[in-house]
Amino acid sequence: MNSSLLNKNSDNSIKDKLRKIDEELENIGVKKLTKKQVATIFSGYIVNSKISDPIDPPDSDDVTFYCMSGTIPKNWKNYPLFDVLARPTGTNGRLYNAIVNQNIYTSGNFIDQTCSLYASKIAGDIIGKVPFLKWFPYETVFPNGTSYNYTANTHVSTLRSNATMEYFFIYESNYAQWDFILSSNFANVDVSNVVYLTDSNGKLSTKFYTKNTTVYPDKSMTTYAIDLHIKYRSHTMAATPYTYGIDYITEVISGKKISLFTKFYTFPNELY
Image (cartoon, rainbow, N blue to C red; front, side):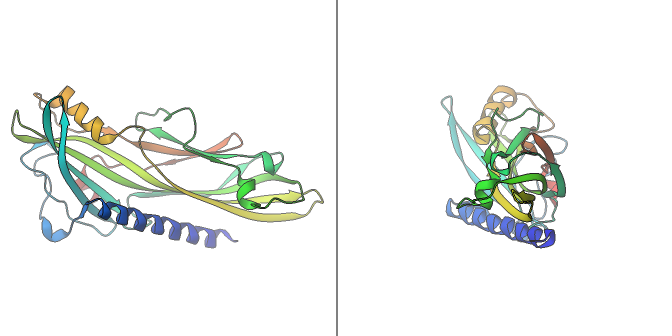
């Protein structure tokens, strides 16, 4: 399969995944927002992250906004929570990023080679000591096995990411205002690789393998938002939200790696 067709299939895979996520959001009561619902967003929050009332932002060509609200009990007090999600409408928008057709040079028997995906946090630390996804490409390429031994010296990798931004607002009764406390993200990740093989008779062949998954931060962002607010914002004014989420996705094949930056926008108006 040529790389352009492989990339087209990757786009379709991401779009299908986005549709499934949208359906899941609607099933749990997350509301899709329209431009008619609002003329402006979060008036004054750039100067002061404590605002009078969080309101729904307008959609743009490549971003659709959703919102959900509820009450979170913590330390014998109920905290009203307003959660805004900025979701990509497809690929090639501002929440999308990709590394296309990058050569990863390896050596040895194809059956022993592994492919792993790691995530790094906004702070720059690896999330955990193990990958969030790991597999043997051999098992994908030859699900029923093969009688030949193959060596693989080159994998041509396309790594794609479509991020969803999430903005958390908590109402604080001490000063009767909403606190824009946290900006976070998660990402749908698609790996589409071509591998060049040589069998034990010297015959050349080309195979491809793909994986698609969604990677989230390593803790509950709702709980984290509440904890941050209680610790730092119950009585103190602040100008900007905290940030926490996925910074980079790193693909490692037999010790060789490539990294992809995951899009992150601290303020919702960056996505108008």
